[in-house]
Length: 212
Image (tube, rainbow, N blue to C red):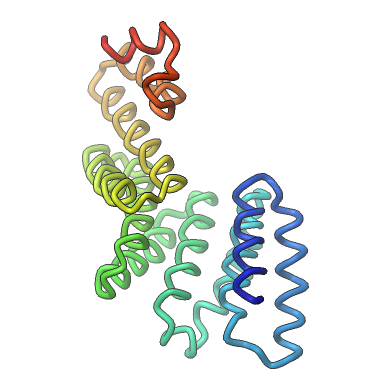
């Protein structure tokens, strides 16, 4: 039941219903803490963090996730650490705090790599790509995003593969602009929806732009 509640809230947060997800997770956290079922609380807090991020409240997401991530018991739970670090990295990134965002994303990447968790390592790669781009490291951003995209496609993780593809596009746009190729950068920036479509669904203009 706990897993069902947490997954449902996470899906709600990612599909346009963050307020519903937030309310459900605050209720669940209160109930499980009251009943002493603390092993599920980090999962609920991660889902709560994503609902707050989706509602554009990154500071509140940090306030919820940080103390739980720092709890000694969470140090023994690799998956919980990854989920909470993901929330913290995204929240700090939203607040334009690259140092703390990179700390959380770097922890997530290192832990996932050590545990052989390719999915979480790839998700950390998306965050590192966004940070690289923010810091002007466009080629490194492309490399991180491309590696993440390749892994996520292999794993069939469509939602995060889409996010990784967008990071590849953004990094390439930034690099083109930095090198003075403004027309190419504008064209690539406008290609976002074409890149996300299946080839048979492209419009005539999108097919032509893709060939060019």
